[in-house]
Image 1: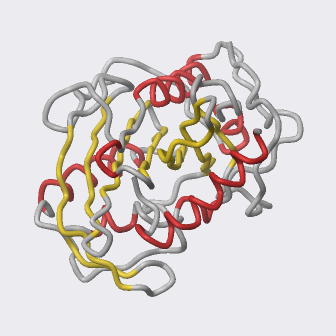
Image 2: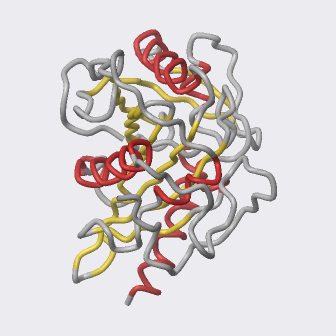
Amino acid sequence: MRAKVAVAVFSAIAVLGAVAGCGFGGAGGGEGGEGEDKDENRVVRAVGPDQLRHVELGAREVPGFVVERGSPATAGHGLPSTDSEACRPLVTALGSQPQPAPVGSVVETFAATTEKGFQGLLGTIRVSAYEGDGARSTLRALRSAARDCAGGFRMKTGEGQPQRFEEVRTLPAPGLGDEAMAYRLVNAAERAPSLVTVVRTGSALSMFFATHLSDPGAVEVPERLVAAQVAKVERLQRAERPPTAPPPQAGPPEGAEGAEDGEADDGEGAESTE
Protein backbone atom coordinates (compact mmCIF):
# COMPACT_ATOMS: atom_id res chain seq x y z
CA MET A 1 0.00 0.00 0.00
CA ARG A 2 2.69 2.49 1.02
CA ALA A 3 4.78 1.67 -2.06
CA LYS A 4 1.82 2.41 -4.32
CA VAL A 5 1.20 5.72 -2.56
CA ALA A 6 4.87 6.68 -2.87
CA VAL A 7 4.89 5.95 -6.60
CA ALA A 8 1.74 8.03 -7.05
CA VAL A 9 3.19 10.90 -5.06
CA PHE A 10 6.46 11.10 -6.94
CA SER A 11 4.76 10.74 -10.31
CA ALA A 12 2.45 13.58 -9.35
CA ILE A 13 5.35 15.71 -8.13
CA ALA A 14 6.99 15.31 -11.53
CA VAL A 15 3.80 16.51 -13.23
CA LEU A 16 3.55 19.35 -10.74
CA GLY A 17 7.04 20.60 -11.50
CA ALA A 18 6.29 20.66 -15.20
CA VAL A 19 3.05 22.58 -14.70
CA ALA A 20 3.92 25.18 -12.10
CA GLY A 21 7.69 25.34 -11.91
CA CYS A 22 7.40 24.06 -8.32
CA GLY A 23 5.42 26.32 -6.16
CA PHE A 24 2.31 25.73 -4.02
CA GLY A 25 0.58 27.05 0.46
CA GLY A 26 -1.85 29.00 2.48
CA ALA A 27 -3.13 28.20 5.87
CA GLY A 28 -5.53 29.85 8.24
CA GLY A 29 -4.42 32.34 10.84
CA GLY A 30 -3.64 36.05 10.82
CA GLU A 31 -5.31 38.52 8.54
CA GLY A 32 -3.92 40.18 5.47
CA GLY A 33 -1.50 37.43 4.53
CA GLU A 34 1.12 38.20 7.13
CA GLY A 35 1.73 37.23 10.73
CA GLU A 36 3.08 39.67 13.25
CA ASP A 37 6.85 39.73 13.77
CA LYS A 38 7.10 38.35 17.30
CA ASP A 39 10.78 37.72 17.94
CA GLU A 40 12.13 41.15 18.77
CA ASN A 41 12.84 40.16 22.39
CA ARG A 42 13.31 36.42 21.96
CA VAL A 43 16.64 34.69 21.48
CA VAL A 44 16.84 31.37 19.61
CA ARG A 45 19.84 29.37 18.51
CA ALA A 46 20.84 29.45 14.87
CA VAL A 47 20.34 26.17 13.03
CA GLY A 48 23.34 24.85 11.12
CA PRO A 49 23.30 22.65 7.99
CA ASP A 50 24.28 19.50 9.90
CA GLN A 51 21.33 19.95 12.26
CA LEU A 52 18.65 20.38 9.62
CA ARG A 53 17.96 16.66 9.19
CA HIS A 54 16.57 16.68 12.72
CA VAL A 55 13.60 18.79 11.60
CA GLU A 56 12.44 16.38 8.89
CA LEU A 57 8.99 14.95 9.46
CA GLY A 58 8.61 11.21 9.78
CA ALA A 59 6.83 9.34 7.01
CA ARG A 60 3.62 8.99 9.05
CA GLU A 61 4.28 11.58 11.74
CA VAL A 62 1.28 13.69 10.70
CA PRO A 63 -1.90 11.56 10.49
CA GLY A 64 -3.49 11.57 7.05
CA PHE A 65 -0.28 12.36 5.18
CA VAL A 66 2.63 10.48 3.70
CA VAL A 67 5.87 12.45 3.93
CA GLU A 68 8.99 11.49 1.99
CA ARG A 69 12.44 13.01 1.71
CA GLY A 70 12.80 14.88 -1.56
CA SER A 71 15.76 15.85 -3.68
CA PRO A 72 16.70 19.52 -4.21
CA ALA A 73 15.09 19.37 -7.67
CA THR A 74 11.78 18.45 -6.05
CA ALA A 75 11.54 22.05 -4.86
CA GLY A 76 12.04 23.46 -8.35
CA HIS A 77 14.69 23.26 -11.04
CA GLY A 78 17.58 25.70 -11.03
CA LEU A 79 17.12 29.45 -10.89
CA PRO A 80 14.02 30.77 -12.72
CA SER A 81 14.21 34.18 -14.35
CA THR A 82 11.92 37.15 -14.97
CA ASP A 83 12.12 40.64 -16.44
CA SER A 84 10.11 42.01 -13.52
CA GLU A 85 12.41 43.07 -10.70
CA ALA A 86 9.44 43.58 -8.37
CA CYS A 87 8.28 39.98 -8.88
CA ARG A 88 11.72 38.36 -8.75
CA PRO A 89 11.37 37.07 -5.15
CA LEU A 90 8.22 35.13 -6.12
CA VAL A 91 9.96 33.68 -9.16
CA THR A 92 13.12 32.72 -7.28
CA ALA A 93 11.02 30.89 -4.68
CA LEU A 94 9.79 28.57 -7.44
CA GLY A 95 13.30 27.25 -8.09
CA SER A 96 15.89 25.27 -6.18
CA GLN A 97 18.38 28.10 -5.60
CA PRO A 98 16.98 30.48 -2.94
CA GLN A 99 18.36 34.01 -2.90
CA PRO A 100 20.04 34.91 -0.61
CA ALA A 101 21.48 31.42 -0.38
CA PRO A 102 20.82 29.61 2.91
CA VAL A 103 23.57 27.69 4.69
CA GLY A 104 21.53 24.55 4.02
CA SER A 105 18.05 23.24 3.22
CA VAL A 106 16.07 20.04 3.54
CA VAL A 107 13.26 19.17 1.15
CA GLU A 108 10.29 16.91 1.80
CA THR A 109 7.22 15.94 -0.23
CA PHE A 110 3.79 15.28 1.22
CA ALA A 111 0.57 13.77 -0.03
CA ALA A 112 -2.84 13.50 1.61
CA THR A 113 -4.02 9.90 1.92
CA THR A 114 -6.97 7.96 3.27
CA GLU A 115 -7.77 4.27 3.43
CA LYS A 116 -8.65 4.57 -0.26
CA GLY A 117 -5.19 5.89 -1.10
CA PHE A 118 -3.88 9.14 -2.62
CA GLN A 119 -6.53 11.89 -2.74
CA GLY A 120 -4.92 14.44 -5.09
CA LEU A 121 -3.53 16.97 -2.59
CA LEU A 122 0.24 17.05 -2.59
CA GLY A 123 3.13 19.42 -2.26
CA THR A 124 6.60 20.22 -1.07
CA ILE A 125 8.17 21.47 2.17
CA ARG A 126 11.51 23.26 2.16
CA VAL A 127 13.15 24.20 5.46
CA SER A 128 16.17 26.48 5.09
CA ALA A 129 18.63 27.83 7.65
CA TYR A 130 20.16 31.26 7.05
CA GLU A 131 22.98 33.32 8.39
CA GLY A 132 22.40 36.83 9.69
CA ASP A 133 19.20 38.48 8.48
CA GLY A 134 18.69 36.16 5.51
CA ALA A 135 15.45 34.52 6.67
CA ARG A 136 13.82 37.81 7.64
CA SER A 137 14.84 39.60 4.44
CA THR A 138 13.64 36.69 2.28
CA LEU A 139 10.19 36.65 3.84
CA ARG A 140 9.82 40.42 3.63
CA ALA A 141 10.88 40.41 -0.02
CA LEU A 142 8.21 37.78 -0.75
CA ARG A 143 5.61 39.84 1.10
CA SER A 144 6.40 42.95 -0.92
CA ALA A 145 6.45 41.02 -4.20
CA ALA A 146 3.06 39.40 -3.50
CA ARG A 147 1.59 42.86 -2.96
CA ASP A 148 3.28 44.49 -5.95
CA CYS A 149 2.57 41.62 -8.38
CA ALA A 150 -1.11 41.03 -7.65
CA GLY A 151 -1.81 41.28 -11.38
CA GLY A 152 0.47 38.35 -12.17
CA PHE A 153 3.88 37.97 -13.78
CA ARG A 154 5.81 36.22 -16.52
CA MET A 155 8.83 34.04 -15.95
CA LYS A 156 11.02 31.30 -17.36
CA THR A 157 11.70 28.17 -15.37
CA GLY A 158 15.24 27.07 -14.57
CA GLU A 159 14.96 24.89 -17.67
CA GLY A 160 14.01 27.86 -19.86
CA GLN A 161 10.29 27.18 -20.28
CA PRO A 162 8.11 30.33 -20.36
CA GLN A 163 5.22 30.53 -17.91
CA ARG A 164 2.67 33.13 -16.95
CA PHE A 165 0.86 33.48 -13.65
CA GLU A 166 -2.22 35.61 -14.02
CA GLU A 167 -2.82 36.36 -10.37
CA VAL A 168 -1.07 36.58 -7.01
CA ARG A 169 -3.54 36.73 -4.14
CA THR A 170 -2.45 37.30 -0.55
CA LEU A 171 -4.07 34.86 1.89
CA PRO A 172 -4.51 34.78 5.68
CA ALA A 173 -1.25 33.65 7.27
CA PRO A 174 -0.89 31.05 10.01
CA GLY A 175 -0.29 32.37 13.50
CA LEU A 176 2.93 30.41 13.86
CA GLY A 177 6.62 31.16 14.21
CA ASP A 178 7.93 34.71 14.47
CA GLU A 179 6.17 35.91 11.35
CA ALA A 180 4.41 34.32 8.40
CA MET A 181 2.74 35.00 5.07
CA ALA A 182 0.70 33.08 2.52
CA TYR A 183 -0.32 33.62 -1.08
CA ARG A 184 -2.04 31.97 -4.03
CA LEU A 185 -0.69 31.71 -7.58
CA VAL A 186 -2.78 30.90 -10.66
CA ASN A 187 -1.00 29.43 -13.67
CA ALA A 188 -2.54 31.02 -16.78
CA ALA A 189 -2.10 27.92 -18.96
CA GLU A 190 -3.42 25.34 -16.52
CA ARG A 191 -5.83 27.48 -14.48
CA ALA A 192 -4.53 25.45 -11.56
CA PRO A 193 -3.98 27.37 -8.33
CA SER A 194 -0.88 26.76 -6.26
CA LEU A 195 -0.62 27.86 -2.65
CA VAL A 196 2.47 29.02 -0.81
CA THR A 197 2.88 29.48 2.94
CA VAL A 198 6.08 30.81 4.50
CA VAL A 199 6.84 30.75 8.23
CA ARG A 200 9.95 32.29 9.76
CA THR A 201 11.23 30.88 13.03
CA GLY A 202 14.36 32.73 14.09
CA SER A 203 16.92 32.26 11.32
CA ALA A 204 14.99 29.44 9.62
CA LEU A 205 12.32 29.59 6.93
CA SER A 206 9.76 26.83 6.45
CA MET A 207 8.13 27.05 3.01
CA PHE A 208 5.11 24.97 2.05
CA PHE A 209 3.98 24.56 -1.55
CA ALA A 210 0.72 22.75 -2.40
CA THR A 211 -1.57 21.93 -5.30
CA HIS A 212 -4.44 19.53 -5.99
CA LEU A 213 -4.36 17.34 -9.08
CA SER A 214 -8.02 16.34 -9.22
CA ASP A 215 -9.92 19.22 -7.60
CA PRO A 216 -8.26 22.67 -7.83
CA GLY A 217 -10.89 24.09 -5.51
CA ALA A 218 -9.80 21.74 -2.74
CA VAL A 219 -6.17 22.84 -2.65
CA GLU A 220 -4.85 23.81 0.77
CA VAL A 221 -1.69 23.83 2.83
CA PRO A 222 -2.88 21.69 5.76
CA GLU A 223 -2.62 23.57 9.04
CA ARG A 224 -1.62 20.50 11.06
CA LEU A 225 1.23 19.79 8.65
CA VAL A 226 2.49 23.36 8.96
CA ALA A 227 2.15 23.27 12.74
CA ALA A 228 4.03 19.96 13.01
CA GLN A 229 6.91 21.17 10.86
CA VAL A 230 7.27 24.53 12.57
CA ALA A 231 7.15 22.85 15.98
CA LYS A 232 10.15 20.67 15.05
CA VAL A 233 12.12 23.72 13.96
CA GLU A 234 11.26 25.51 17.21
CA ARG A 235 12.26 22.52 19.34
CA LEU A 236 15.61 22.34 17.62
CA GLN A 237 16.29 26.04 18.07
CA ARG A 238 15.33 26.00 21.75
CA ALA A 239 17.00 22.73 22.73
CA GLU A 240 19.38 23.12 25.68
CA ARG A 241 21.77 20.65 24.04
CA PRO A 242 21.03 20.80 20.31
CA PRO A 243 22.47 18.01 18.16
CA THR A 244 25.73 18.82 16.41
CA ALA A 245 25.51 16.13 13.71
CA PRO A 246 22.83 14.76 11.38
CA PRO A 247 20.70 11.84 12.55
CA PRO A 248 22.10 8.36 11.76
CA GLN A 249 21.81 7.44 8.06
CA ALA A 250 20.78 10.97 7.13
CA GLY A 251 22.33 12.43 4.00
CA PRO A 252 23.76 15.97 3.91
CA PRO A 253 21.22 18.77 3.58
CA GLU A 254 20.85 20.63 0.31
CA GLY A 255 23.50 23.32 0.10
CA ALA A 256 25.93 21.48 2.36
CA GLU A 257 29.20 20.11 1.06
CA GLY A 258 28.68 16.64 -0.36
CA ALA A 259 24.92 17.05 -0.80
CA GLU A 260 23.37 14.80 -3.39
CA ASP A 261 20.01 14.74 -5.09
CA GLY A 262 19.05 11.92 -2.73
CA GLU A 263 16.12 9.56 -2.65
CA ALA A 264 13.08 9.23 -0.47
CA ASP A 265 14.00 7.73 2.85
CA ASP A 266 12.00 4.80 4.15
CA GLY A 267 12.85 5.69 7.74
CA GLU A 268 10.42 7.16 10.20
CA GLY A 269 12.01 10.60 10.17
CA ALA A 270 14.30 12.74 12.27
CA GLU A 271 15.32 12.10 15.81
CA SER A 272 13.53 14.02 18.51
CA THR A 273 15.23 17.16 19.79
CA GLU A 274 13.23 17.23 22.96
